[in-house]
Length: 365
Image 1 (tube, rainbow, N blue to C red):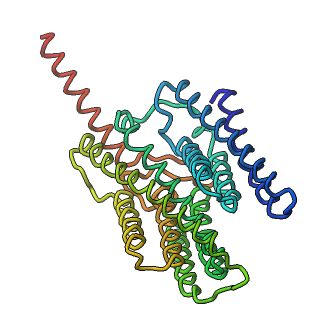
Image 2: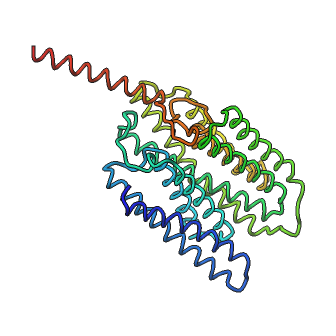
Image 3: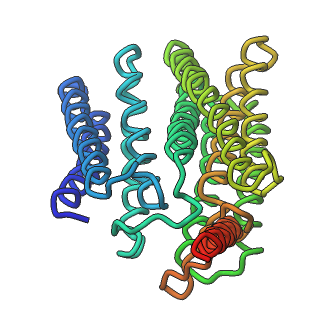
């Protein structure tokens, strides 16, 4: 990584942290609240621009589309969260979402910065990723995940503004346990079954407890106008992310057929992407037909957020394996083992080279 990329990426990460504290500070004073919100937005815009330039510079330096490993995908994910929040700010007054969006971006910047130096460096692509399908298949998925994450954050604010404080606390606890499971799975040698139970159990219990606690309403915290606003932002985020996820799944099938001769192999991550798609399809159906209240739909969006997190990072760090598994941290060091996709691609490459060598030998003879 060049010094320019490092400086720009660090600037984007610092700006997300700075905007987080400015947004938090805006809630502590009414006199300077509007000014601080504008300052926080300006800082976030600067960070978004710095990250955009950093991604472009990385692509120019590497001579390829800069989305090939976990670190680069985290940069894109943070870019998607920051960009989607700024995009919705143009149409909606969602200042209460600013500190959550900044916190999410800062968290993923921190997660990426803790990855080993080998992940930060620009290296030749593994054979499995040397395909034009990579830049067609992966970007829509990452941006869709970012939109779904923003919808989940909006759902938390919607629940808070509707007075469902206990539901917010329970569901937030489930999300934190899921994040802890991913962190432990990435950076420690904790047993995979413990991590899987922590993620699945924590998320399921948190959302279920939040659902059961919907009947508990704090009337003093209710703001119907804001609750309706964040319900709309929640829906619009999913409405943007869902087609992108659909495109990502379809192009993934086309890439799989090109690489392995099969459109669908029921790989764990493929299956989880389908489950996530079905979850958000159910949300859209329920939202259009008004079969659930806005508060229950918010919990569905939070459940979708957990599915997104599992699909995006869980299968790497929680030991589910499959064709899309790229290794995990063990004992503080990165241990990268070739997955099935890479082995299949390598075998295919070796066969093609051998066949070419035989043809050339026959021509020479």
